[in-house]
Length: 109
Image 1: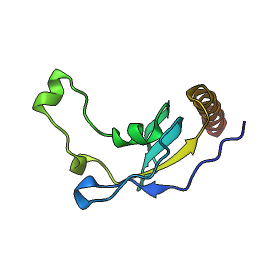
Image 2: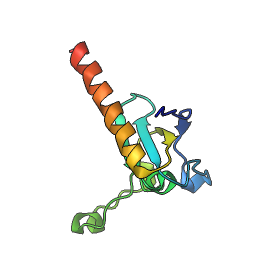
Image 3: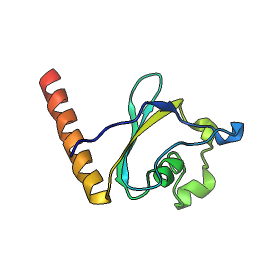
Image 4: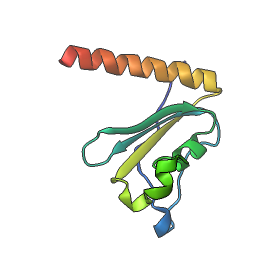
């Protein structure tokens, strides 16, 4: 199974009427800080578009009722996606990517 990532795209700002472009189906997503390249979010999911739409949305915990984060509080983000046929295939591909990343970082240390 070969996984192919899409190009990096700026994470949209809903207040400006920008829209998200992502598969409505299983796959992997990666979100990073556009300035530093630091990983912000990563996952293997059933619906990539839905998962990306929820990035940065606070959970419904008691704390979130008192300290709500707006999209303006998010750093400048960019994202990319990789579509798969099933969520199981997405999880396998994500595990392999995580393993490669850890091996690279271990070698660089």
